[in-house]
Every structure is written in C-alpha cells, then in structure tokens.
Amino acid sequence: MRKLRQNLAITCFTVMLSLSFSAQAANLIAFIASDTLDDSVGRSVSIDYDNIREEMKTVAGYTGLKLKEILLEGKNNTTQKFLEALKSLDANEDDVIIFFYAGHGYRTPSKGSIPWPNLVFTQERKGVHKGIQYEYVIYNLMGKHPRLLITIADVCNDVMKENRAPPVVTKALATAPNFEHIRANYRHLYLDETGMINITSAKIGEIA
Image (tube, rainbow, N blue to C red; front, top):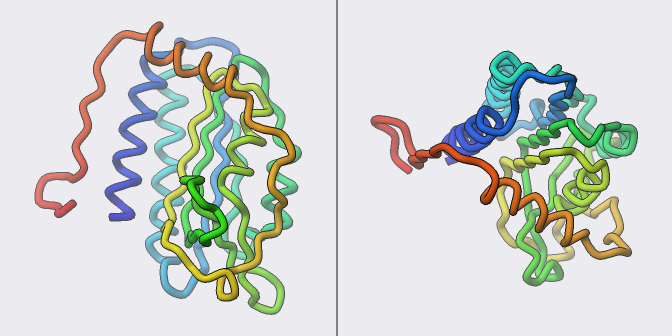
C-alpha cells in the first residue's frame, strides 16, 4: 500500500504541475525527508526516496522550473535538522514547493478530528523516537506563500495511546491556518485550469 500511495500521489502532482506551469524563472523546491535507516521500513523508504528524487527531476525537465532540493535521509533525518531546514526554506510567490516524507507515522486520541498524522523520527539521540505534527509542517510551508504547495506524508495514521506514543517536539500553532489562502489555491486549481487527470489505485497485476 505504501508504494501504491506514492504512485498515486506522484501521478496527481505530476499532471497538475504539467498543466499549471510553463517554462519561467521559478523554482521547484523539493523538500524530501525519509527515514531510510529504520529497521522495519528503511529499505522500502530508501526506494521511495530515490524514486521521488528522480520524479522531481522529470517534473523540472517538463516544466522548465529550476529544481532546488532539500534532502534529509539516514542519520541526517532528525527532528532538529528537519525543523532547521523547514525554518530556513525560502520561497518566492512563483515557486512550487513539493514536500515528501516517508517513514513511520501515528496519531493519538488527543488529535481528535484533525486528519493529519504525526511524523516519526527514529534517528534521535539515545534511540528515543520523536514526532512532528504533519499539520505543523503544512502550515509552516503555507506561510512561505508559494504559488503551489503539494505535501505528501507516506506514513501510517493509526492510533497509539498517549503514554506509548513518541513525544511531539513541536507545539500546536497559536494561529489558525489562513483559510483565504487555502480557498484561493483551491479556486485556482479547480476553476482556472483545464485538462484531464485519470487515476487508478494500482498498477497492472497489483492488489490495492
């Protein structure tokens, strides 16, 4: 299912980028973080990491966007380095930001109706796993005001008890998300663009 979700997501945003952009002086900022050293999912995550990097090169080639990579994998995929990269990311209003995280994920009952999982980071000091809220990442990237933002978290979203869950290192955002900005992006995508997107949940011979 992890590979299927990735293939589905890549298909979606590749088509959207091809429809939305022509060659111009704008950047394709690919923020890719993957837990490639995890004992249970590291091998498959490594494949995802390589595949998404190749896909970003393909997108840049077709659209004329200048590819800028922010890469965190292996021992560099820690909460500290992740948050530093997130804070220092700089984008212009014509830029496209693609965020991709592959690894473990979870949620706790306290998240309530918030649909987003927490991203797990296993390469921490003393082997203590830590978490970062996916919504924290989304809202911070929205604050960079790119022309288009696509985020993908290829992680689980199952419920864990609070006392067994990795501690979250980020605090809940004090301000609500900019819904006007969200609404404008939806209107641009669904009202201004033309074309066709055809999606299946599995390749030939695969079980969804």
